[in-house]
Length: 116
Image 1 (cartoon, one colour):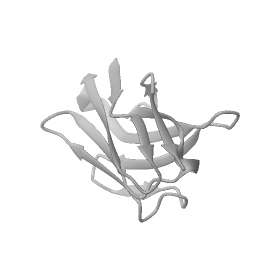
Image 2 (cartoon, helix red, strand yellow):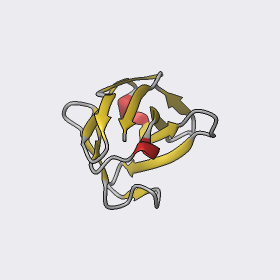
Image 3 (spheres, one colour):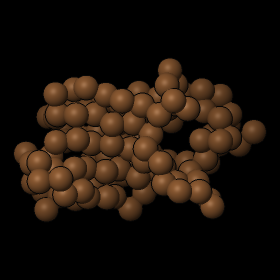
Image 4 (cartoon, helix red, strand yellow):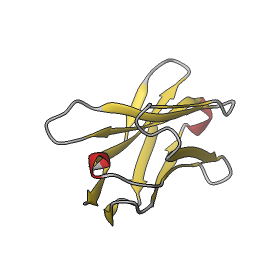
């Protein structure tokens, strides 16, 4: 079992920055990929960024150059640094973990609101 707890969401003006954190506990050793997803009102959940155990990262085109995903293995924490935020970044952001058996786990989400 893996438990994920997100934090760091809030209200920010357009152009501002936020850093989201995802604290990971449980069978941390079994995790292969960590990702951030988001879901805006009335829209489907979408992948924002992912980081593999080896450090490879991938990003949605809409956030490339603005968001950075990273992980601190010593703290069992994954981060999402979000810069140059836009109103269209407003969403609930979810942390996701996929283990080597391809089972995935979700956090409860943290709300990010970007005002224009």
